[in-house]
Amino acid sequence: NERLDVPAARALLLPAWRGQTQWAPLATTVNVSLDGALWRRIGASPSPAVRVLLECYRAWWSESRRDTKCITHREASSLDPATS
Image 1 (cartoon, rainbow, N blue to C red):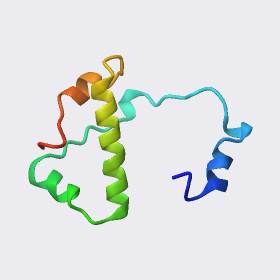
Image 2: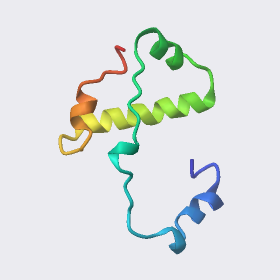
Image 3: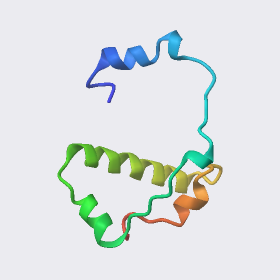
Image 4: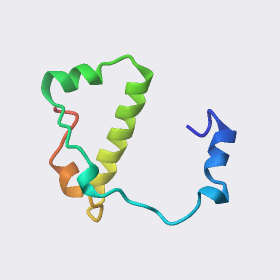
């Protein structure tokens, strides 16, 4: 979070870091599926790190479902973390 460490956030924006975006090939991704009791257990975790991770996931999910042009729209539309 840039508000927690302003100098670190500024360092990320230095010209040395700027450049062409690089994408990882799909072959490097791993399909992880969490549902049912395990998903609910993770969702109930008191860990701050897990809470942030789930907050980011929910933001991705929500935006991907909202934007039909998003490359993850179809995947996000097939998932519903609220009912998993």
